[in-house]
Length: 328
Image (cartoon, helix red, strand yellow):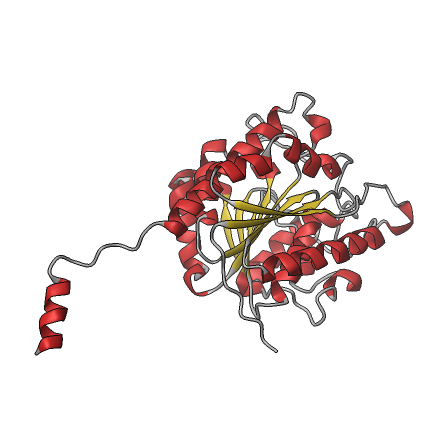
């Protein structure tokens, strides 16, 4: 029987996904605890949200896994996703906006699977410097974090491709890559043939974060379709946010990240978002956690203001016209 979900604009469902199993280095499994310690829940409550905390999934840890060099730590990743999927289904059903604090990038599969439990089609907005379109056949590293989008669209290891029953989890035309800067040759070849939309970092810098985000939302028909947002923090320029696993030269400056993220986050059809790749091991003073909490609270405060604003007043004189027509 179909379940009718009533969206709750003043509610956030928080889930911790402490995993580094899909990543390129240990440490991201500590991100949920670091963000909680930096006051994430209290700050969201002060902004006006009712926060339901679904707790943290069991930690899944980085390992070299030399026995499975083409798809490392796959069993651990799938186990973590099963845990997250259960929590995500409950969170989506509640009508709250779901916030997954990760972790590695693979955790978005659990969030998307929870959303697909109740929504036939869901768009994916992938805010990342990398396309993550490698597969076990093409990967230079064997790390699933470099293959997440490929598995979401149905290409790669069967254990992940079929994690959501019948693939794909999200159709290629319903995926938008935003902030691209690093592409391996197989990924470039694939994008040249794919209906997947993609926006390069240089174009965002040219247009501004706000304008590029608004244009992207229009192109993905966000007003007509629910979507999930994935934010990989290595999309930020290294000098603005260094505590990530795969930094590099270039990237978007923090002002463009902030403005684009706010546009995406305040959209009414955003079902949930996950934040990935913050590594507390590379942030001994905790300044990165504070900066990330500031970013989240600022954007989600803008969302609350946008979704709870009173309806615009009708044009002057419209009430009188309606009344006279009724009495006539």
